[in-house]
Length: 130
Image (cartoon, rainbow, N blue to C red; front, side, top):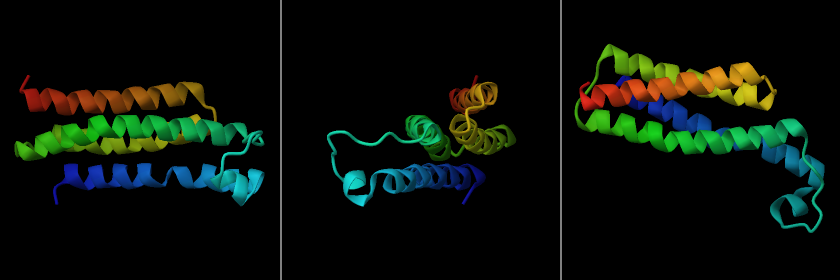
């Protein structure tokens, strides 16, 4: 497996487990019945859990773009140092983004998002041969 696919797998697995802390928090706060149901007046979740849920949604939205770019590069047999580094940067940018979003660190969150976006642009740049 090449580095691009390896990091696509890491990003996918990370995105797949982000929900666990905020759902466990929901169960603790609301109880199992309300956590899996549709209570009329649900107890509010802690701000960190609300932010982590938003970060998870953002990770899912960006995974669609990242995965598409990596899979296109792989289908075209494009593999170079810039693409590999972009995949590594994207993974760590997403990890930092989730942590910064969850713990309300605004500048770090934004910089991590921009780093991930630039990593995606770098991969697209190489796919398009610019």
